[in-house]
Length: 209
Image (spheres, rainbow, N blue to C red):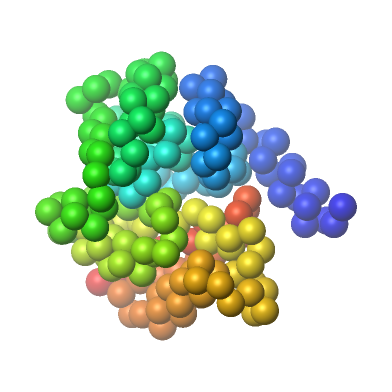
């Protein structure tokens, strides 16, 4: 086991998950959903707390792991979460309720993000989380840049995609999509970007203009 592997394991073990997050993670495994790691979830919670987020939108609810984590950092925030799978939302509702999230602070929208996001108000969100089908990553980033306020965050987990993004021999559509987005944001004057290697990677963008 490499030193990096040991560090990643230590970072995940350091992040203590609540019972609802743990149940959401177990259920995610049953459904074959690749939820954010504990270390990435904790990092998202810290970022949400650091900007005192009050409005968060998430593209890709899954079973609620990332949403539950980010609300730990901003427990009074309103979370809008979009997913195409109605069954995921039915499970997620129960888990958010177990975590004490008030129903008025949670809006689960079932449907296609491509159809829903254009109807959302621009510059209205403190945080946009993109944890959906990575083949639509570029389109979702473009939507996120419109939706997030100046000074707000765009958080993209799985940004290293199982080690494939950093490996130039991996030329499939998913690592290529992540590399294209990273090139785009690194050259943009509209955002500041940082890539964390925690878990499967977390790309963090701050809108500056």
